[in-house]
Image 1 (cartoon, protein in one colour):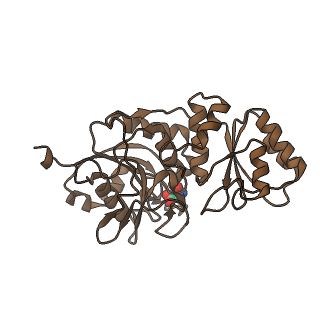
Image 2: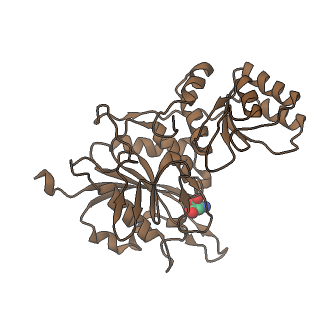
Length: 346
Ligand code: ASP
């Protein structure tokens, strides 16, 4: 009977601290294979799930990028109908980028893709990896009263919280609660039980069976972080980076930037060249309100597009995704401010 069927979960292991082991010679942590990881979590067998795994060559997530994201997204798409949910084990350093990229690549996703990892390797006595892995599996298997998956999006599970993937940022290099979504409520709180926040969870309204996979990401994007005192030559040099198509400009406060004429002229010339410049705030909480201050308004007049309350991670992967679809700069400009998969508040 369908109701008694064991949940089927696919674990995709990409590396990160969770599976790392100390090199006895250098004492540095190095990626290790999946068997080592699972052998350290015998409790997994207490979950009555059918669990399969795919292991990629384990890497430190500093080496993760568009090819790795495409591999993960393709593995999910290829196995989409065979599994109830997916758990991606990943390093924490670029986890928020991967979560954002996957959310764009897996359009119309209606099953859980839960990304987790840990701050301490799973073989260590005080590891957070065991709990994170088990909770991620439970979330990937959770169903709503109507039998549909409780989570129907890409999410990051870390310690006590489940966050929307494309709203998350790594906040701490050593706290077990390493992630936070500063502009969107948590999807679940993990305490004695797993308490889902149903009003925050994404629900797809279209045909729930069809996943649309897009793996092409355009890499000609970059961040431009403003700092007081930045010289004209530095600014011109960065804006004229050869081949660049999109820039996520990280501005002050509610989206403000210098008002000097050389700065505004340099921005205008870049926009006129067809480069899409997206304005996101250096503040982790709140976002761009382009018209609140005259300086932000000037940027809008130069053709800079507001990234509103998007994270930097979501903004840069959204640019990669939109240009990867082969869209023109005007098309990318008009889609940046739209909500594609819960990454922005309209
Ligand atoms: N450097 C590691 C990584 O991102 C850190 C971690 O997993 O926590 O792969």
